[in-house]
Each structure stands twice: as structure tokens, then as C-alpha cells.
Length: 247
Image 1 (tube, rainbow, N blue to C red):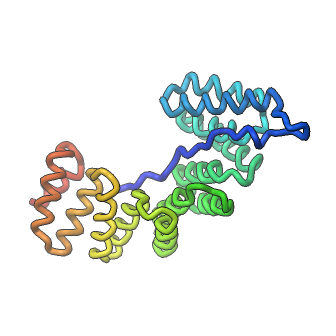
Image 2 (image 1 turned 135 degrees about the vertical axis):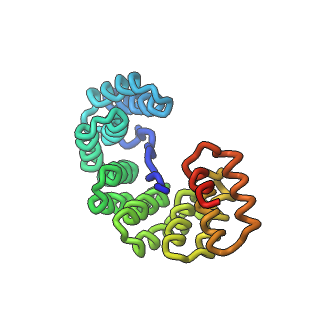
Image 3 (image 1 turned 180 degrees about the vertical axis):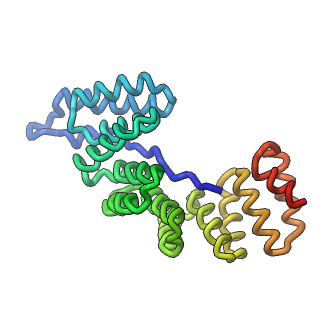
């Protein structure tokens, strides 16, 4: 049951960061910031053509805009232009070392491209900024990457830190549930699954993990209820097929 890494956290450009000594934002920087915002909007709508137009324009107006490079990198990754994506992620993190979103996104990119060992440093870089508004994302991403290379103790530590930052963060909860299940700590796995299902809609993966956990704990009533939910909501899923195989 793969857990997707948390991605696509992009802050809007902050015009005050571009103020000159005279107190005014240069027109080209202001225009670039506006086009970054428009490009991000089109990215969120999955309108990649218009996103490309706006973000290319933003970069031409201000080639040193970390926000523009960060958003353009996300676009290039969506377009499967891996080399271009990495170049712009690198530019974003170098132009603005305090841009936690860019560092998190670059770390996520590295992890998705099976460079887990390299990714951890960028997640930690994101966390160096005390003003980072969503540290739970970077902690959880670091944990997911470390789980892939079997560094479970450190992954567990990061996930607990993610929940300390935001106790109802669903991705951290399901990740901890999976980690505890793999460590045969079934009561802990159930605890995190129950918390996950209180704050997020059940998925085929979460229900199947819950079924497996309850089977280990010999709780037939809960298994029956969970399997009915899996059948009703995800009848064509691989998880339901796996359940049918053990009947």
C-alpha cells in the first residue's frame, strides 16, 4: 500500500519581499508576481497550457523569482520534463534558501525519482525556517522517503513530529498506522487507523490495512464491518480482490 508523498504546496508571491529602497515594487517584479499567482491558479485547475504561458512570462519578467521557478518546476514535472523540473527546483532553492515550500517540493521530487537519500536534506532545509507554516508536510515527506529505504526508526520519529505540529494530519496518521503494522504493533496500528478514519474519508488502502490489523487482533465483528465498507465503496479495487482471496 504505497503512500503518496505530500506535494504541491505553493505559496503565492509576496509583493512586499520585492520592495526597493524607495518603497515601491519594481513594475517587472510586481508583474512577475501576479503572473506566478495566475500560473498557480491554472496549475490547480490542471490547465497546463495557460499555466505554462503565465509562468514563462513570470520568469521573463523576473528571472530571479524563486516563486516563479518553484511553480514552473512543478509544471515541468507534470509535463514529465524531469531535467527541466530539477533545474528550476534547484534555482528556486538557491535563489531563496528560506523558501520552505520550494525546499519541500524539491525533496518530494527527489523522493519520487528514487533519490531518497538526497531528499532528506531538503526536507530538513524546509524545516530550518521557523516561520514555515506547514512543517507537518516536510516531516511526513521525509518519513515516507525513509520508509522506502527501510529507515523505520527515523521515519517514526519524523511522523511523531508531524503529528506534534498538526495532530489530525491524515497522511502522517496513515503512515504511522502502516509503519506500526509492519512492526507487528497491531494495537498501535489500530489506534492510528481509528484516528485517520475520524479525520479523513476511508480509502481502499486504509480499509484493507484496517481489516488486516483486525484479523491480527482476532476481532471478527470489526472485520465484518470493514469488509462491508470495502465491498460497498471499492468493489473493483485491488484491495477488495485481496480480501476475497482469503475468504
